[in-house]
Length: 145
Image (cartoon, rainbow, N blue to C red; front, top):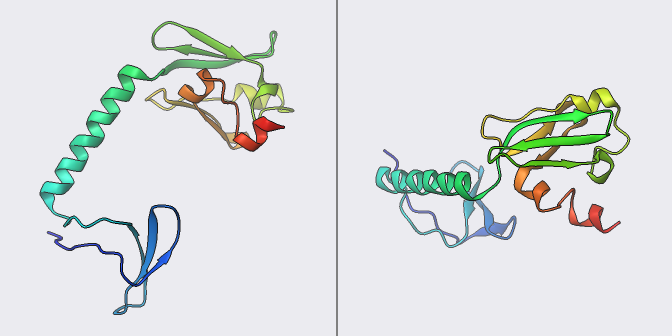
């Protein structure tokens, strides 16, 4: 079992809450979180897994999830049926990465089993269902244009 403490001295900033620590023994860099002073133990790991499972359960209850998705070519709409029975649709030109896509590309859409997002593999486009329902069809900078 692993049993070590992460600390943040002799670090190189990487992002807002992560740092890259240079190990003087092997010369490799490791990503760690700032201000993380817990020992990594089996108990802590089980606690974190339990918290993640609870967060997932809450998201399943409170966030919209998709049951199905398809492209309606005659109306030029992406149609998403939600697990609660509601239907959400939008024209593809509203969404970043979908404007100008062919009907075949738009029809090549799939959902993961969780129903939390939609994916267009051939276009390399992904959207979260809660974000789409909230009217977020791209990045902040893209939506500002």
